Structure formats: structure tokens, C-alpha cells
Image 1 (cartoon, helix red, strand yellow):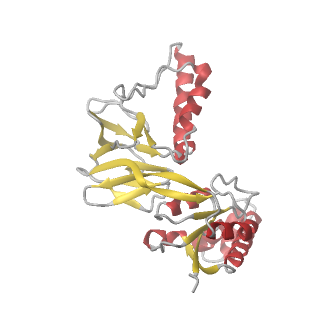
Image 2 (cartoon, one colour; image 1 turned 90 degrees about the horizontal axis):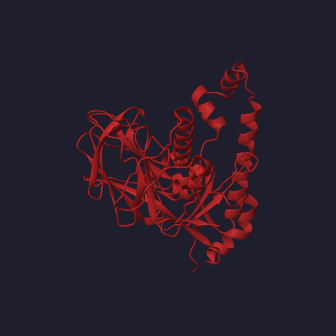
Length: 336
């Protein structure tokens, strides 16, 4: 007897559904939005396009096996079968949020609204399912491996990041901690630390680097002096040297165009503050395969670690706790 295939379709509430959830009824949501001068039809049309795409996708999948729908909010507690084929219908962020809860399952990512989303991680549209699914079943479809970051605590808690990890205060205010890599350590006070994967290098990390480069450039023009970004790890010979402002685009691309299956992670300290009890020298660098970045919390309360921008799914990171961040052996698998 042939094995019955199972597809798990991952969805997310549309902005319209979130508005109705907040204001209880469609009428109240419409009143609130129009009262602020917004066009409520933007939300209704977007919702209609999403639902049509979802229904077309599900309809195609039912020709090949069983289909189960799963809202994003249930991902942390859902147990996927080893042979499940996971179909994500939504934005890039939904793909990343889903991937970190999988082991070896393949993700088929569907862009439900090409008029609204570019979809870097969304190679397919609903009409592609009739061609794509048979190829995946037969193992004839290319699959991209995607590296992930892993953070583990001494009590056994673990969290994975497909794009990035954030370590700091829940409210994004000043975080105190000690950062360690190899034989170097430093007490810091900052707005937190971002650890990015190859996939995430064009996301939050790009924003951080772009800001740093342009601050450096502006500082030079105001101050009339050479600007630089601090040397962060001489031992690894991965030094960010003085930047010639005319060549910042080359510098930026060299750090941001990382492969999705990169064997390194990149960390960046947000807004480090030098003081009598804190330094700001060790603020940017790479965590190569086999290496670990260690962070020891000095935050009595509200210290957290979350991944991929999902603040609701976090690890508590209070004073005395140590986090170990490294490249995960687990990889994501995205059909392309």
C-alpha cells in the first residue's frame, strides 16, 4: 500500500483578521480605521487575495494527500511528522519562523500576493503546486540548505534562529552582560546583541551595518578626520580596518552577501556604551564553525533571547545565566 502523504499548511492571520480580533467586529474595525483617515478597502482586498491564494494552494494539495492547516501561533508546540511536507503561505518572515521548528522536513514556500511582497524566500505561487508537488514527491526538485544559529543555556533550553538571534532587554533598553569569544572577554552595556546567519545578513544586520557606515561617513565630514570601525578580533585576523568613505559600498557588500548555507555567523553589538564599568571594543565579528560566542547575563530582570523577530517566543536570560551561541548542525531545507 502506498504511503499517504501529509501536507501541513502554515498560515498567519491577515491584517484584517488581526483588526477584527482587536476591535471585535468588522464594523468596529472599519470605523476605527476610516476615522484615522485610512482606506479600509486596503485591508479587505489584501485579505481576499490571501484567502484566494490559500484556497487554491490547499485545493491543489488535496490531490496528493491529506492537508492540515496550522496557524503560526501554534508552531512552538506542534509536532511535525518526519515525512510531512510543509507548505508555507505567507511572507518571508513566516518561512523563517516555521523553519526553526523543523528538522529535516522540506518547506514549499508560496507567495500569496506578488503585488505586495517581493518574496526572497517565496519562489512559488499557488498555480505552481501542480508542477512542484509531484517533483518533490519524486525527489526531483532542487532543495536549498539554509544555515541556522543555535543558542543554548546551561539548564538545557535551546532556541534556533533562521535569520538572527537577539540577546538583550525585553524592552530594548540598556542590557548588561559579559561577552566572550576565544580568550577575549569584555563587560558591556548596550541595546543588545544581534547574531545573524547567512540568510539574515541582508535583514537586520544589513540595517545595523548601513547605519554604522553612514554614521562613520557623516562623522568624518563633520569632524574632518579619518573614521574607522573598531578592530574586533586580531587573533582571527578578521579585522574591520579603517574605511575609506568612497568605498563603503564595497565594504558593505563583502559582509552582506553571505551564502544562505554559510558556515559562519556574524554578531553585532547595538549602541555599545563605554563607561567606567563597560567597554565598547569588541562590537562586531564572526563566529566561525566550531567556535562559540558566550554571553553571561548581568540583567536582574527582563533579560531575554528571541529569534527571527518573534518576541513572544523567548528564553528568559537573567543575571548569572550563560548563553552559548554557535552554528547549528540543524539546517533548513527550502524547495526552489
